Image 1 (cartoon, rainbow, N blue to C red):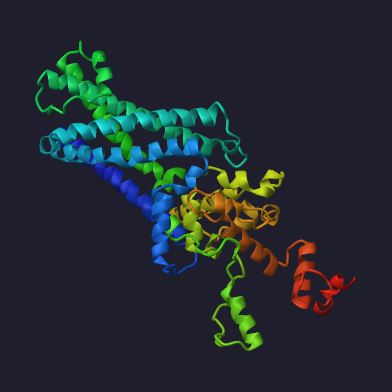
Image 2 (image 1 turned 90 degrees about the vertical axis):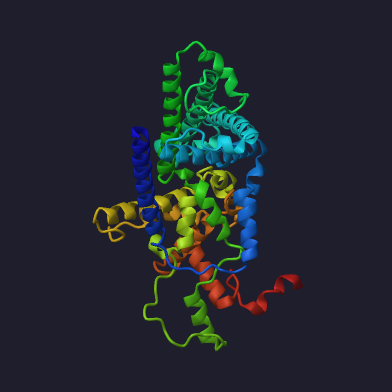
Length: 434
């Protein structure tokens, strides 16, 4: 009864902190402007199934994709066993599903163990890539001490949790042979049987302490992991699904028009469909802070895996410019977090005198973007950093008139001559007459 009470209290505490954090994340995402996305549901579901669930875009880099798939499948399947842990913890039972599933339970447990080994080996390989091979995109300027440590913490935690499962099952098998009370026969478990010789000579009491200790370590680790993930870049485990569903389905390179500007043009040209009633507040052109972006842009910032594939493909970054699409997403998320923490503590929130543009992202960064969509194409979860960059540039151009002088000349030429060059449209074809 004491173990049951402790487990229920622990589970309740974890649920409380997860709920609190999820509500904060939701409030932060809601800082963005409303946007209705309900078109082409079939295509959106297909994207979610192929890209988020099937990890289609990961396979542009085959070896890390396979290893990531092992971790992903292991995370999904092994967590089915966590359901049994929770039921056992609440009910005070041990392997409650074993008597009902019979021999199939043995098959399942062996699958879980092989997946645990695959996860363990994949995590070791990823640690080597990050810390020994030092893959360039994992050591960029925007990946400061915390983002690098975050990835290592998750990988090390997964290794330890997988070892806990194997050791728990090994001690459990020895206890089954001793016919210890409550230890239901599971059949032979192939991988954990290699650990059995380590425990054969121990007393029943010592074995129970090891088995229960590993059980508690694993479930506490899972619950701590669930809380930690909500503060980590590994939030993409969950947000990749809605992010791929709500991703932009338009053709690459097609930029969204601003409704206010489109309406003004229609009014000027006398086109049908123009709204003749002016809005109560004209609103801001482009974006200066996260509140000027839409909620989908903000959710994408929380979905970012910080893998750096976008930055590795960015031609501006490759030529030494300061632009990093990954940093754009990380800065957007950090600004949301700053506002959220301020609101939570009764502070000024977004009215703190800081802005996403200027305090986090510089004009030099956004002006370096070529709008080529390489970052959008590279992202494994269909994040679109270009949308945020374009909104920031719109603010600079339309609210501050702060674009580079050469750009302003081009804008003026397009407005007056319908081309980037300063000569009338009637002279446009003269080059062919020479």
